[in-house]
Image (tube, rainbow, N blue to C red; front, side):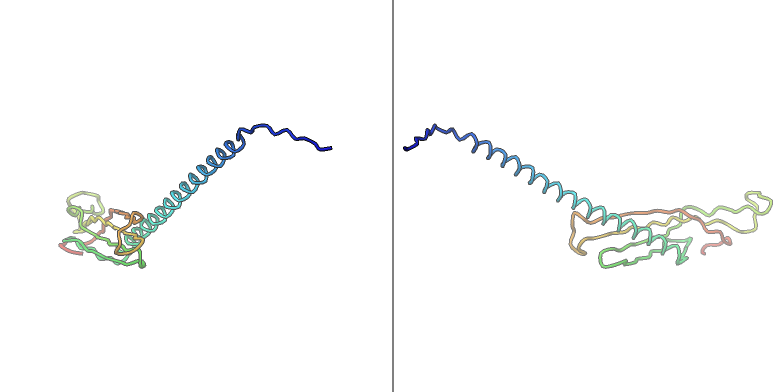
Length: 156
């Protein structure tokens, strides 16, 4: 006996559903890769900014540690941290000196001691490839005000 099989006309719905699922999965995969690439670029930028931030802090510290304070004009200190990071710090006078009160705390009458006011500004640059501008380069500027007490005169 020969068994007769009944073949009905198939409409191909399984193929269409399978292709639609494949398209959805592909779109999700491409979106995930795009998000990961963006997050990686953001992490690199944050790392470069942190390098610039730390370089600016180092520049301020190095400039203040040298003790080169000139009441007549700015003093500039440039420091190369590494091949990608460099900092330039400037210590400039900030206004006129103020009289330091004597033991009786009477302003205007003192022992010839004044406070010289300064403004230290460190500008740091962190470059991904030195000499080649990139969208991942970062800059940081830090400023610190301070004063130095010393004898009254034109220069420290």
